[in-house]
Length: 354
Image (cartoon, rainbow, N blue to C red; front, side, top):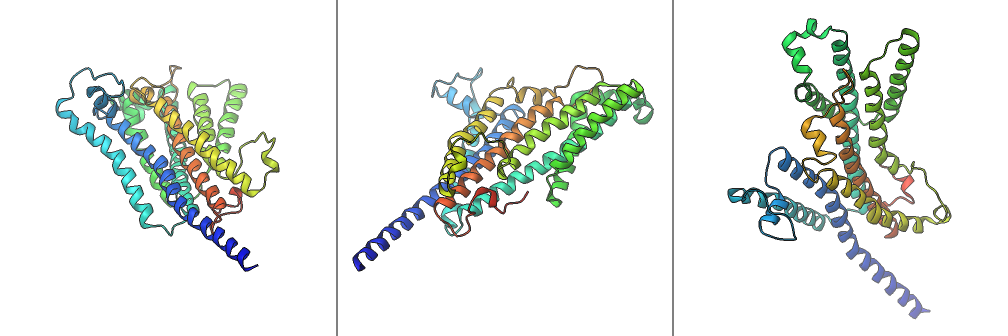
């Protein structure tokens, strides 16, 4: 009896020790996969907007990994390219040091942090599309009706007809306001965004069939908010298990088996998709995301909204927030498997609120 008890205690201690060794590795993996996404976006900004050489140019200049060499020798720009590489290395080192110095922190606590960051990004994006959509619709309406010149003057009215000017003078400041608002509110506002989509569509119907009045910016506003609703709410829906499942086996699994499925699925299937969206979307100046953003692309339908370039940016918001939530899901479910004290019995019971 005592021998069996001793054996059981030994097995339990071995399991606890193994869990203790695995926990830091999981934290480093999840935090690195998440935060390196921000480093990648920062590097893309440096390459496309600041015209830094980039990591790929440096590798091509050195003839490594088959990358094509830059059109001109890098010369003194090598230091900038090395700095861009150093950002990735520094982020991994910082995460490793942080994890090793906070060993008492649980996986679920890190999952909460990642979800909170994703929630903040989603809130800022929501307020951005709300403010920019309303402001751009007002400007477009005034242009259509010939009232903009009387209100702001001929020179400014002409400038507001240029997509780059309108984006930099009107959209970017409103984005700043949206970020400020998101710092002081906890509500993501997806319910209100859904209502706004319905109201925007309703006013098209009323004005078209009752007053025979319709302009291009009205339909653009519906598409603008509709796209935001689906892309921004995806991570929130994932957090609360709201996505539609085609369950064959999952619904019959117990908590631990579900945790295995969720953790492995988030790491193997979810996170790579998010990275593919970012890397393919920002592969070069003419990619599906970087191209519209660099040119401030707009629709060609009359006096429509000047927000088409932002629709491309939505893909980055989707990829980043989903990446954060996938890694949060992996950590939270790993906490269930490692039987951490604060781990939820299931993802749906997580106390992370957006």
